[in-house]
Amino acid sequence: MNLFEQIRQKPFFILGPCVMENQDLLYTVAEKVAEIGQKYPVTVIFKSSFDKANRTSIHSYRGPGLEKGMEMLQNVKERFDLPVTTDIHEPGQAAVAAEVVDILQIPAFLCRQTDLLVAAAKTGKIVNVKKAQFLSGQDMFYPAQKVIEAGNEQVILTERGNMYGYNNLVVDFRNIYDLKKFGHPVCMDCTHSVQRPGGAGGKTGGDRTFVPMMALAAKAFGADGYFMETHPDPDNALSDGPNMVKLHQLEEAIKPLLS
Picture: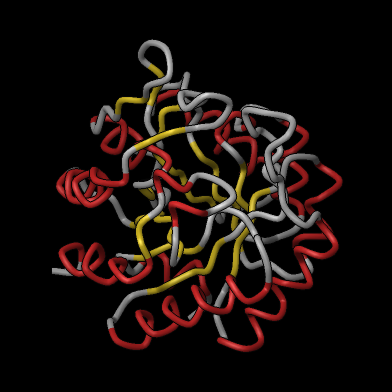
């Protein structure tokens, strides 16, 4: 059974630190992700970003870059036998990342970028398209269709909240129901949906307290998978710390989603 077929056997989990801070961090988190995958009958995918291209401030840490990032992900893949994913921001990054990753993630802000979607599709890898903060679930038919018409039917759609007013996101869980109508696996991004974008004085804030609740609500609406960023010390993480689940609490956040 290939990875996309496994993903269709829900639930699946996309887990990892927001950004690649160093190799040791990736190993620490990947070890826990692999342990969860071995302990429970679920599909786990390791995620981390080589470049956070949409940071609030130009002075914020972005990551190690494409070449070094792919080397770091390859090391994780080989050491822990995990499928891996990362996000791409430009069409030219798709083929390079696809040499290592199993899933290419399209960032929410870029989900309407035709050239990016087509480039990702043409790699033959699974394409996870995150719903923009300004779109409805119904609107996501068209980004998914761009991938399909480029010759790739391996599509995941991810809900991550909508912007309602300044520095705040709200999740309308009806979007999950609408996304599922298209026949693709639907994932709930439980960590980015609790963000307060740009709301912490030059960086993004948020509240990880609500992550398990977001996951359970998404489960009630029929989500197939769950995206959770996690870190052993999120309060000192270099990106999205307020939203990430503490690594030692990750398993407890996941267990209620398994029954």
